[in-house]
Image 1 (cartoon, helix red, strand yellow):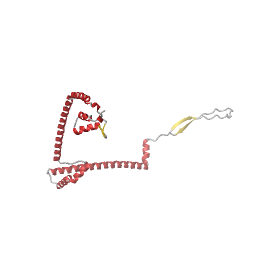
Image 2 (cartoon, helix red, strand yellow):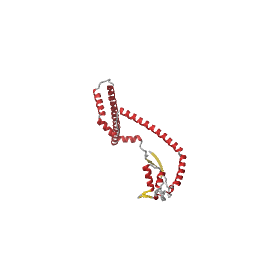
Image 3 (cartoon, helix red, strand yellow):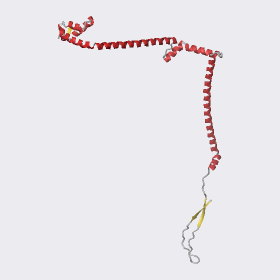
Image 4 (cartoon, helix red, strand yellow):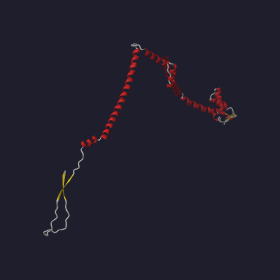
Length: 246
């Protein structure tokens, strides 16, 4: 307990006559008042109070038990799943190993041969092949047919290359002929001008009516197509008709 000193001042009272007829001064006394000290409980005290409470202890025990159960359950599920995967993988490897030993005649397994024969029959069954072809939109052919088709395709590609080479040669020849015929084109134009002036071809009316709905130009084209005449000859023949002259 701590002692706290306080100065308490008493109010002045009216002077009272004393036995001697004199007034006494106001007495100021110092009183010491004892107050209790408030301190926070320590951590150990709080733990002792919590541990002494049975409901809190029971709740804590339940939470710890539930956490351990959840963790154990998750670990158990993961271990079981891992064991299943590992066991399945090892079982498949063992089966393939036994089948390989039987295939190379190290061991004799009747069930392995039966399974292999059944699988081969199922794969080579025409109905199975037809179903797979329809599902995958493919066509299964034998190796001989594939080689024959490949050889035929190579021959066709070779022929196409040869034809392309021949076409390039012919195009070069045509270009050379056209280059050589350029001077003749100019001479031909000059001769046509002279022929038009000489035979009066400038007076030929192409759109004039020949007979019915046929024009002079249409009749000229007909003569060229049917008899193979040149344009000059057909035009001269049509000028003999007066309706084809301007």
